[in-house]
Amino acid sequence: MSQTIIDTEVPSPGQAPAAARVGIGGPVGSGKTALVERLIPALGAEGVDLAVITNDLVTKEDAERVRRSGLIDPERVLAVEAGACPHTVIREDPTLNMTAADQLDLRYAGLDLILIESGGDNLASTFSLDLVDYWMFVIDVAGGGDIPRKRGPGVVQSDLLIINKSDLAPHVGVDLAQMEAEARAVRDGRPVLLTNCRTGEGIDAIVAALKHDVLFR
Image 1: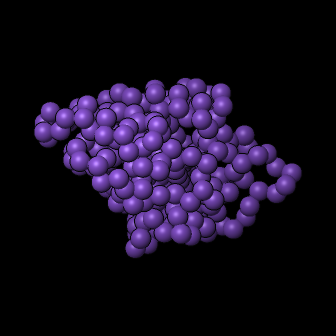
Image 2: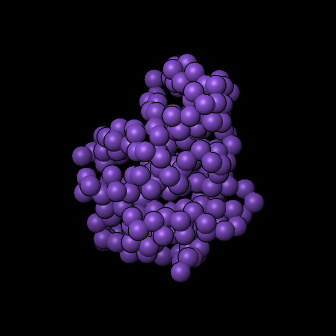
């Protein structure tokens, strides 16, 4: 059964170190949940013990989708209802997500990684560093090739920018090479990766980045 986490327990000093926490943000429809569904088996194949937290406004739709996928034990997927503003619970007051992550740490000894998927938001969405150790921002080609030029905080400040739905570029009149170049230009050396979460293209590169930058494997 789906649930919003309200348990306030936190790990005690004698317990194992907390799992790394990685945020996944981006606009509605950019492919955040599809990315989670690709990362679960890809990280699992690398021996990464993981769990997932999803955020929706007033439903648990994304959590239920991931649970039904058969990719992960449903008990390892927790849902947070963000209310009217999706970025409030990942930035201004991330208490609900922090509590959910603490509960997963309590429940699963040896957990390596918790993926925290934000509710769909705009380009200004960012994660509090009290909540996550590292965060990715997902935009998609169908949203327009000019997204990098808008220089939203999610595009500019995230640890990793993902340009998803790369296969759609010729169908929506986007010059993919130019979009990627403009993204790199505004990110001051921070990495940019192209993906097609429908086919799995580019997922290995994200896993490699997480292993190098977060898991140190």
